[in-house]
Image (cartoon, rainbow, N blue to C red; front, side, top):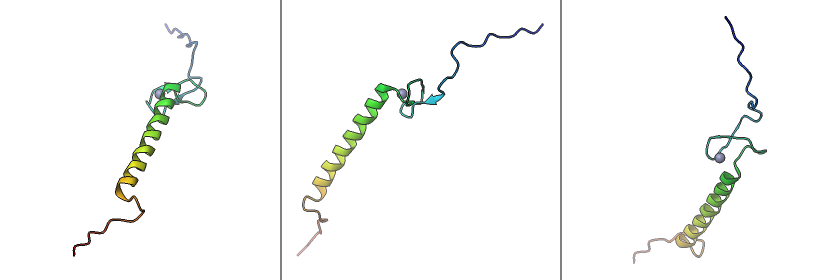
Length: 69
Ligand SMILES: [Zn+2]
C-alpha cells in the first residue's frame, strides 16, 4: 500500500544560507538581520584594529630601521 505523503506547507521558498552563521535564512537578502549587524560590527572592529596597528607600527609612514651606531 503506497501512501502519498502530504507536501509540506512551507517549502524551501528561499533556500539561501546565511553566510555568517550558516543556517538557512528566509529574509530577502539571505542573511539574518542580527547576523548582518554582527558582521558589520566585526568589520568595523577589524578596521579599527588595523588602523590602530598601522598607527602603532609607523606613525610617520615609514618602517623603523634599526640604526645601530
Ligand atoms: Zn545568520
